[in-house]
Length: 100
Image 1 (cartoon, rainbow, N blue to C red):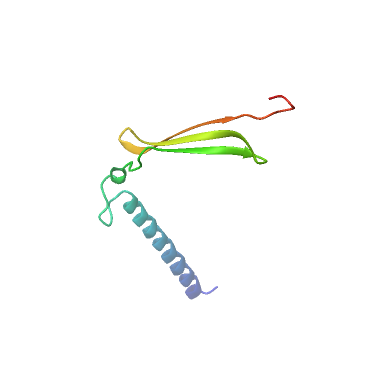
Image 2 (cartoon, rainbow, N blue to C red):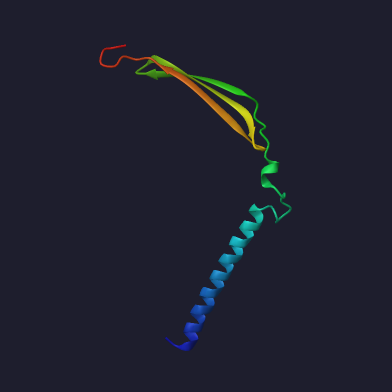
């Protein structure tokens, strides 16, 4: 390998590493909210906009109803961070080894 081709490989490799580091730096700045007009705290823009919702599901096995499930979604905030609480209740009733 000649000196000129070795220099080309180092130049190309160095350029690729520099571009990769620059792109990682931009992602970090964007995620911290310091780039493109981001907020100082990205979590501050999140709001629990979901109203409390309920859903009922029937659980069937071979066409026969064997139970149900009731799921409730509620907005909740913990330590200033908005989120959603999920409460799921259910009941199954079926025979196991011919015993109800």
